[in-house]
Image 1 (cartoon, helix red, strand yellow):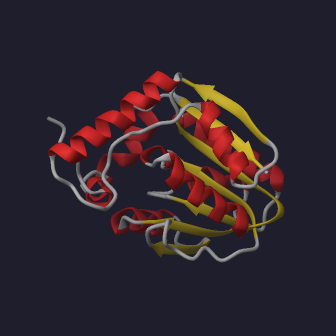
Image 2 (tube, rainbow, N blue to C red):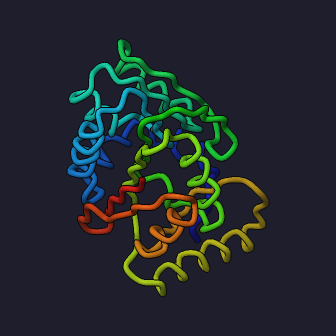
Amino acid sequence: MTKLERMDDFFAARVDGYDEHMLRDVGGCADGYRLMAELVAKLKPAKLLDLGCGTGLELDEIFKLLPDIDVTGIDMTAQMLARILLKHPDKRLTLMLADYFKADYGDGYDAAVSFQTMHHFTHDEKLHIYRKIHDALKSGGTYIECDYMCATQAQEDEFFAELARLKAEQRLGDGWFHFDVPCTVENQIKLLKSAGFVEVNQVYKQENTVMITAC
């Protein structure tokens, strides 16, 4: 039986091998980090929001192209945020140890990004986050999401049903537990448009890793 772990505990226990795992084992991520950085650089943002920034793999690439960018990164795992500071002690970084559902992002961001973090949440939870992102961006700002997405509605339904079964079986209450519940690309686009974004497009796909831009 899959034992569900609390989200912060799951990532804290795996921080040492996280970068290697994402770059080597998760199809589409290595190229995705580079593409995200290129797309961000084209926007020429002064101020960037990074949700679920983890160990900063996307920031590693973004800082190569935009070394002076001002970044606010939010993550719920202290050990991962510590890795960013070790890698980038001289960058303009504001790191928040927080649940990004509850955190106050502020506003005035030119762009926002997330990489492989949103596939842990329901439609309603994502809609809440996407509205917060939309409100945090300047008029005309862009959100770029790279995430695990599934091919069919049937697959999506199976993931959510399995999570519900496991939570009931393990008698788990409220809180974030690590389990993948990817949505289809079509549902992701609908959610982003429902949150207020007008132009939403898929710009990349490799295996199950998909990138979407929204503005």
